[in-house]
Image (cartoon, rainbow, N blue to C red; front, side, top):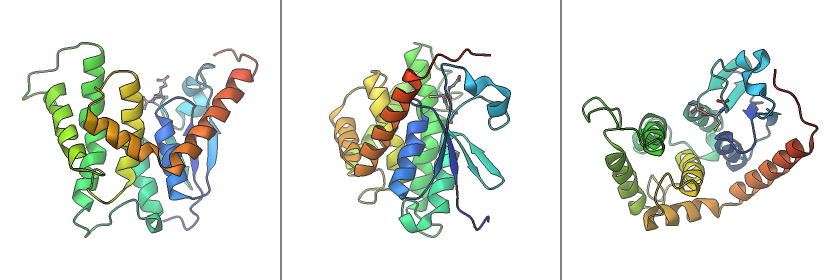
Length: 217
Ligand SMILES: N[C@@H](CCC(=O)N[C@@H](CS)C(=O)NCC(=O)O)C(=O)O
């Protein structure tokens, strides 16, 4: 492993990269931000496509390692800074549920929510990776109802991801404001790291708004 733990987060305001920014604040570690201007199309320009050919944020750079995909960024960061205690380690019985709920986000929640938003029929249950939206949501809500966090009493990086994601998906009415979800989101959003990340996001978004319009290539 690279002994130097300096990391750079490729980030753009008002996107999914807020989750990774919040995680860095929760970890309490120094980091650099590479801020992309999406209105100017920077995510589709060659310099960024060399980092992530998908043209998506977040992405992370640590030494020679480039990590793309939000869940991979979460796993990587929480393991890189184990002393923060946000990732149950191998051997801890909570490691399995921790991995499960992180991967559930990318593998089940995101595709189900996109289908739901577009009113697309999922594939037949046996072919669909998430079954159907209602089953996906019920599975999540049942877990949140056990609380206070996804792993019970233990707060982890998975809660940083889900707290951020459920905040914006509830805001867009892509998930219902059920009591289990609302209570969970309020609990996670009360954390000082969330306030710090949101303040930083507001500042960076305002700076982008104020900058002279850049023309997309
Ligand atoms: N599968 C990716 C999805 C990330 C994603 O959708 N990011 C959006 C922002 S919310 C993005 O970068 N969109 C820019 C674009 O497609 O032009 C991940 O999990 O990291």
